Length: 243
Length: 67
Image (tube, rainbow over all chains, first blue to last red):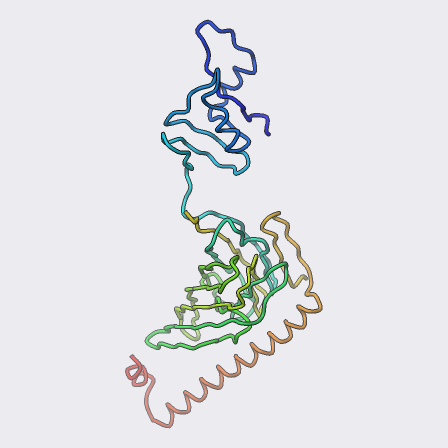
């Protein structure tokens, strides 16, 4: 329990002399509790405030702020997308992010911005668990357009990785991708949908959509991005709130 | 210079390291695969150019056909 955590939300009588501890408690603004059990026990007892609509609370175990709506405690300021982590690799050919897929979220959004790639090349992704990549049972489909030409193909990078992005060394910052990863931490098929483009003054500037699936029914906890050429950039991982 | 950037999302710890033996083996396979894919793409483009030349069409005419 932290220094500001309360075990009671006191009420005072007219003319009562307050102790320093009591004054500190009423000076903390939103009351802080170790967990929801401590919060629930802090209201309605002898000498405590009655829980009522509009009451706020902060829980240490989940680092969340809540308000009471008259019937239940509700979270404050929760968006549909929650930042989890970011990687900032420099001049490497393999980027692994471990323990980013947890039971806290079922689906994830991953955003990758390249700032440099030393040669043109495709970037693949392998799911991993326990720090080990899985390199089997992938299926993918690509649909692209380059000027007036439309192209498509299955398993463009084979069946040992997902197809995520094509990096263009001359214009690396235009090689950006956002992709959704569905249910990687569940022991079922994992699906990934990407959309990206790149400015390529030599071969045209394609827009590409890919669908990928990994079908080992494995619960994964991370992923690895792989390129034939060294990459520098930023990869951010977000979780979609389940509710 | 390290080959691998590895981040633990729970602790925030970043590890820069070389490939393990198993990873290096996979890396060799990956490079061979991507080289073969690049060669196949080049072959496809060359064949396409060859067919267009046989047909005697201009680039604009081919674009009009494909649009």
